[in-house]
Structure formats: structure tokens, C-alpha cells
Image (tube, rainbow, N blue to C red; front, side):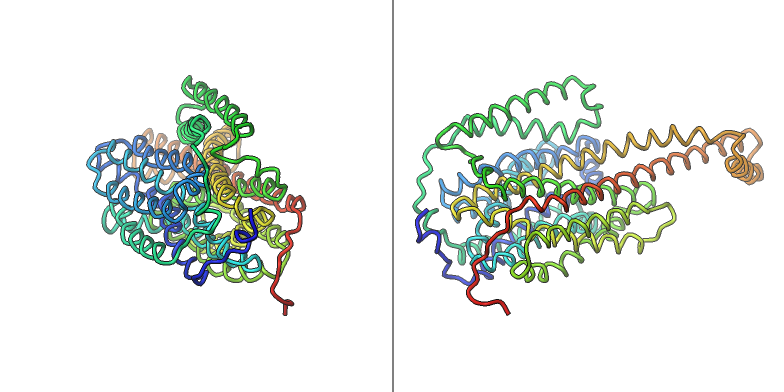
Length: 520
């Protein structure tokens, strides 16, 4: 990389560029969660089962994951600004097609195209922000980027529930159209390519590497999304898909490390900060998406909240992140990144442990404050983590590194969602088997409760019917309590994972930041 590339700065104010690229990023990240609460409505509208409707989520995630790592090469091949505009146009047009879909097949196909268009938006936006700001201001740049990546998936369920309840699920897609048009206008006017992008000659794409990567990611994503429903490795298709994923991944790694022009340059992992950052951003994906999945599930299945109510209950997490992000962006330019990251993981761990104290008599206020602090902690992690992970990389490597970085956050989210969903079901079964041993006439508490319930029901039904109903009520309560403990265990496990991550920041090398003058 020559010195002119290293010293290049855009002619437009970086904050105007930040506003332009964040429109696209926010729109794309919002779409990963906004449809989730509308799945029953999608299924009913298109004459499909809810199980079949989940393919609208899977198809988007698969195509999104495949394009993410290749975004760096594609940007060099076609020009980053031109490629970014093409992705936004493709994403916006496919959003319109999703809203107009008349069958499940048409919706899934439109979602695949939408995922292709959206996959490159995050890494391209992140690379543009990092290059547009001078090194001493990159903390603030990552704060702007984190507004989209952290807040959007949190607001998605709330916005999706409101649109579905008040209008129709189709508006979860139509809402992208005006945002996409505005993003195209602003990016076309304000964003420009740096010299190393304009002068890049990447050559032919590594088609074999791209194909191996596509197979590995697609099979992994499908296993994670569908495995629990078929009891994981008890199903033949899961074993075949797992073998295909592992073999193609191994072949992909060998290919990319030996070929002259790889579609994904894995040699960037030789940088210690980036390698550690990849591990930690994966854990951020696990914690963020697992918590986003668990809490609404608890509120809807055990507390009887509607989709909109559960979305509103967790939305303070977005408020916490939104309030903290500017402060964290300022501190990122003044305080050691590692201290901020460790503090953020500790705050998230404390808030998740706090949620581990839930019971079946809590009010919405008991959910609000842990959610606020989760958002605060995540903003303290994401902003400095992005900066420190790529702070020691050459400018020309940032596009490629950003694609890998965002991919691993999404993979962490997929793994986390699948893991907590599986543990929730199986842990509830374990607790139920343990607790049922106490439902015997010899247990004083059970005897008193069942006798009181039987006496009450006997005043409304005959003796035999009252006995059957009493047993059903007691068994239902047993299931609720067992499931509650499964939620508690999941929240506590996520808290412990975050504590381990807090200690892992010592593996980072300190990033030296050039400052234009003394710090006051």
C-alpha cells in the first residue's frame, strides 16, 4: 500500500458519509429480526405452516452469510461505491418483491435475493467509515456504525410486531423502500472510493473457493436453523449436511491459504488483534442474539405477553445502547480500548445474571432495567472492539477484514440461537424429571396445594372431573416451573460466557493511536 493510499481522506465531511452509509446498514440489520414476530401471520396469509414459514428467515441468513466474506473482493473488482449502490438497489427491489409475494415459494426466492443484496452492506459501510475518519476519530466512527448493528436487531421485533398488528406483515418489507431510496441518493452524492480501490486489479474470482465457502456456510446455517426440530444428529440429513459442511470448510481453508488470489484473504488472521477480535465478536453475537431470542420467548410462553408487548419489554435495551453510544465513542478516543471492552462484558454479564433471577410473578419493570444495562454493555463492547480488532491492519485490508468480522458475528448469533433453544427444551425436560419426584402424596407442600385445588374444583364439577382437572392444573404448573428454571440456567450461562470474554481482553496488543495534538 503506498503512502497516498495510507494518507487518503475523503473530500466530504466524514459525518455526512457516516449518515449515508448507516441508513443502508440500519435497514439491512433491521431485516434480520423484524420478520421473526410476523411468522404466524406470514404462514396464515400464504397458506403455509409456521414451520414452513421459518424458511423465510433461513433463506435470508444463508444467502447473507455467503456474500459477506466475499464482499472485499467484489468491492475491489467492481468499485466499492458502485458495488454498494448495486447492493442497496437489489435489497430495496427485493424488499418490494417480498411484500408483493403471493406464495411462500415466491417469498423465499425474494428473501434469497434480498440476502444477497444485504450481505455486503455491513462490511462495506464499516470499511468506508474506518477509512473516512482519521485514526484518532475511529472510535466515534464505530459508535455511529454500532447504532445500526446493535440497536436495529433490538428494535426489529418491536417494529415488526407493531406493523403486523396495525397493518400487515407486508409492511415489514415495504418500510425498506423509502430508506433504500434515500440511502442511494446520499451515497451517490457523498461517498467516494479511495485510490487503492480505484486502482485495484483483483483479477478473476476464485470460483472454487467461493463455491466451497457457499456450501460450508449454507449447510451449517440450515443445520443450525432446522436441527433441533429433527433431533439433531438423530436425523440422517443432519449427519450428511454436517459432513458436507466440515469437509467443504476444510477444503476452503486449504484453498484460501494456498491460492494466489483468494476470494477471502484468511492471512489477515495472522494479526493477533484481529484474531482475538474475531473470537470475541463471535461471542458478542452469541450473547446478543441469544438474549434477544430468550427474553421475548419467556415473556410470550410463560407470561402471556403478545408479540408487541414482548417487543416493547425488551426495547429499553436499544435505548440503553442509544444513550451510551456517543459517550463510548468519545471515550474510545481517550481511554484504552481494552478497558472499555472488559467493562462492557462485565456490565452485560451482570445484566444477564440479573435476568437469571426472573420468576413467574415479575412485572414488566423487572425486565426493563436489565435490558437497559445490557444495551449499555453491548455499546461499550462493540465500538472499541471493532476499532481494536482492525486498528493494527493496513487500510487496504479493512474491507476484507470487515467482511470476516461481520460474518463471524452473524455465525455467533446463529450458533447462539440454536444452542439456547436446544438447551431450553432439554433443560426443561431435565428439571421436569427432577421436580416430578416431589409430586407425591408424601410431600407436604404438594399435598396441601392439591387438596386446596381439589376442594375448589369440587364446588364446580363432580368429584371425578374435579380430580382430573386438579391433576392437569398441577402438571401445567410443573411444566411452567421446569421451563422457568431452564430460562434461568440459560441466562446464567450467557453471563458466565461474558465474564470469560472480559478476561480475554488481555490478549489484545495495545493499539497506538496517532493524535493531532495533546489530549486535554
